[in-house]
Image (cartoon, rainbow, N blue to C red; front, side, top):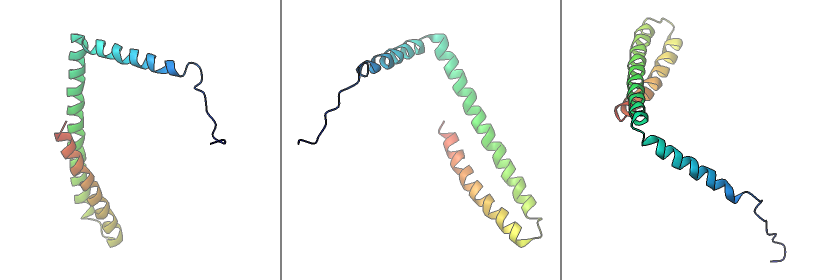
Length: 102
């Protein structure tokens, strides 16, 4: 094909993979460090606890908003809040399932 141009790889482009590979090897070596691995496990455990705590707090919040919504006199406002609560409850159900998989 006469109208196809061949592009050359810019100098230094092929050497970009080498630093990434070296960084990956460095991370692997660091993760083998027992102190670092222990700290990583501690942080994961803390994060899992925080996620579960937040899901519980959101669950409590939805419950309180639902009770408050039942006292609203305006039917349109009440309908809007209940609709939003249903959506939030669906998202919260998914979050509960995901939190259990952590």
